[in-house]
Image 1 (cartoon, rainbow, N blue to C red):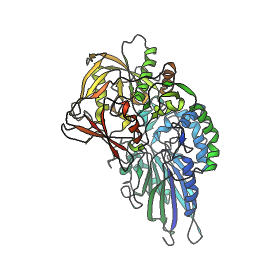
Image 2 (tube, one colour):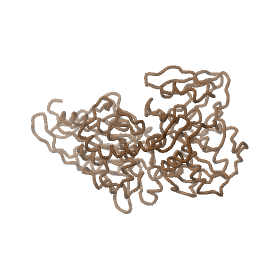
Image 3 (cartoon, one colour):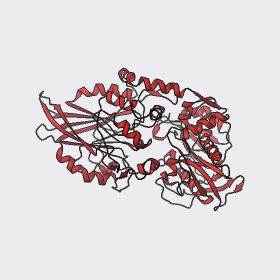
Image 4 (tube, one colour):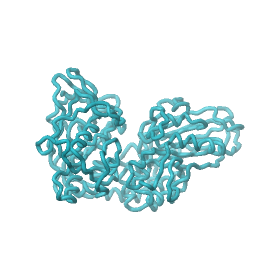
Length: 579
């Protein structure tokens, strides 16, 4: 626009510790990473009168490098070193920043050369981060003159963080609802500033300003006097077109791991500083070359992690993948559960029955057609363990009744749609149900009657009577009042996803990755006996999406009647499953 001041916001979100353009799980170059983002940032910075670089949280957890950095302590954290090198202007906290506890987070943030804000959290023992920051900057106008500009940056994260990380945060952190906090704080911030930018570590949601909404960006966009929103958390990409808005507000969401860079361009009236025009876009980073300077900054940490993940752990006699983990028992998922059960059994030798949960962390979905675990039979290394279980969760132990076990399984199997008998090629999976909630209890046998409606919807509300059939323990029907021990992650035991029926009686009995590693070192991983199944439905079939590489693994599920239907434009392989 002629005469207007051009301000550009560059935004990252959900980097999850991915600095180099490298996948530590597969041992191959990756089409994402902060190193690729850095190349784009350097190019885009010079095209506006003022450019700000912002991060929207979930930066410190989610990769082998992030876990290694946490084990090494908070000083000199490679993520912070990389962000300092790139000259970030401000950032906010995501929920995963709290995975390693408050002392670690304080130490990490002390090394940041940029302000980190969090408006809806209160820490009784002393603030982790200010609620907002005012950035005094100068924007060069098209006439060559400099104009002073005050930019307020404020950040929010999901209130559920106190549930997800209860072991670290119980009694030590209070979180206000996102929209309520925004309505209370943004007017005062606006009074001090020319622009207000919101870093919202939250998904879109349905627009409802519910106080405890995990995903509230759409409702947040209705709060007055916001000039731009960076959102995230759910790893979606937005917008599809430069003029598409979130409500009435320019906004970006940039996927995860540096897959995209958000760009919001604002053109301001030089006299009033009011926004006259705004455009937003999310740029794919896969074609960007890694930035050699950033690669040098992170090289010491990167090389240390390469050495760590290459260390041998054990042997698997069978492939460990998640191509079919949503339609049949998976050896990769069973390894998680088997290791947890064996670990807890050793701690509680007098317990007759110890069960455990397991889930596929990488099963397509928003991660794309390549987002699957694929470990070949043979030697296992640390990188394979990190691929199978990629979070720093610990084990908790529950006492449950047979009835609670059944309800847990009902919640997990609500991922499947109700299927009409006699109809071909129905979609099997509910797209609103995240694969990481397919958290099956191992050690029991059961069947799933897809002709019946699920007990729960994707949000965890009860909507039906359920579909679990023939639930057995050691060959006998599991009595509703029988007591069993169940090992699960602290994330799940805290009630996330609506699973845990009661508080754990043992907490933090081992980090899950370490437990799996120790289990794999004791004996080879062997073939898995199918312990759950779909009840037959003659004349009925469903469609299921997976990775194209699954075509080479069909022999691993000979009990399933699968027919390839081709690869879609999104890259996923479609399979027909005859029930």
